[in-house]
Image 1 (spheres, rainbow, N blue to C red):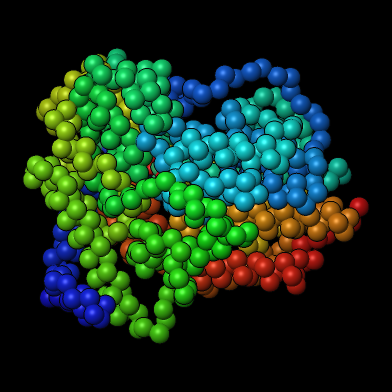
Image 2 (tube, rainbow, N blue to C red):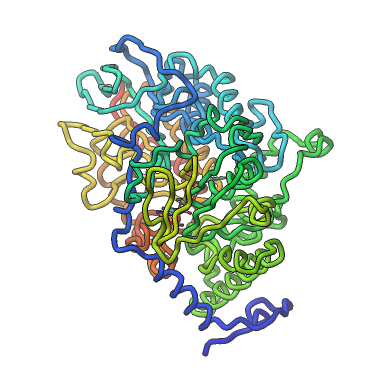
Length: 606
Ligand code: NDP
């Protein structure tokens, strides 16, 4: 039996012994009873017959004539990735910028997600980009969604990005025109415009998904997805006050990061709330608080960059003198390495390191499970709310209200794990096993399709030089330099997680990417260069670097409870898609490349 004490893993911290064999067996048992043979096929996209789940409830769609004009830069995606790219391009002197989004305004994920309780779960001082440039200090340590959405709008206003912007518009094809040295861009509005440069930043979790519950379409009550919250029905707003639910029996399906934020509000305001849970989230202390005005007044120029970089370094396992954030993310840095590229201490032999990490993980998860017992009064309910998997198998959650909601007399937890989720729906009820729960309203907090937007998904066909199809030329995996661009596809740039490095503060990752792209375009303009394109050799070399540095986390993924992180238990192919020395090393590499080698991608002159 591989029993070890925490003291062995972390000298000086004497806590009770952990039986790792027993824990592994329990985790495997909990995973096995959740794995479904239909894997990712169990879900329905909110399209076609379910298209009304994806309709924009916030902004009316206005008619406009199709466009055939030409811009210098088209940015596809009006979330933080697109916005910070637009901002940096303006600062680089680009006047002709067109932003485009399927939504009715800027904000990306914060445009769509306006459900009650919505908050950022990364500290807002590091998460909300360009705070100093826009002149805003967040009101809360973990900002509410509405403040973040307003900040996105403020970035667009500050940098003049509303000018020429197109909303409720989806790019449907990109075709390179060699003669015009520009992309021909077609959209679902009948546009056929041109852009010298195209930048795609279309997000990773954008399309709402629904569980493929038999009978879902027969339900006659009210129903919607959390990312299209129907305040017309519920009353109230993102701060709560859902007075329309006072006489309603409401079902919330899903207990991921969204469910954890929504459930306290619905529990407070509905006549009765049934929470349909399949896998419990790990829910740690939040400790949100208002920003201290004295602290804010004392901030020195450059404070945000320093804080962001410090957070990134800490969660990536880099050596730092101080942890400026000191929260649930920074204190669990070493538990995040398995899932998100991070620096590994190679001075410790791999086997010993694995054991140390597993013990630290077990200790953290024991703490999370103990908190459930402390907060939830009914022991049977508490038992159901305990997560049995390793910390990063699912997105960790933080809340000081979620577990408490299950002490309310009007809230019932319905565990569906033994049934693989909800069994079926009828005209007026949600059924689990043989038990029907009659409800007036069903709210789906069931997450998003992964990888359905952007060039990798195939929803935006791209034809480069000589009509070369982008996805066909990537049939054996993406081929880029640094994740940004590939040979044969001039003046086309991608933002997002692609052959680069990632972190939990994705807004920071996007900012670095945006700054890199803006620097390259800025230099090309200055030097009168019309075409930006890496050579096939440079792309091959980067693919080799990514492959050589890749760490394979498929074994860890395979042992995790199913979810979108591991393709519902089907696992994720071995490493090879990201730069495993981690984001700090990647950003350093990009800076050095900008200093010494940028000329390599600057091709044909005007
Ligand atoms: P998730 O995919 O994380 O969660 C979906 C939930 O629906 C899970 O609890 C899932 O259970 C449940 N579910 C799915 N099908 C069924 C079924 N048939 N019966 C019962 N339950 C079912 O989506 P979220 O919207 O919660 O979060 C998505 C991501 O968005 C997060 O991982 C995070 O990256 C981001 N996010 C970030 C926030 C922030 O504050 N920064 C806040 C909210 C979201 P199971 O786990 O068993 O599959």
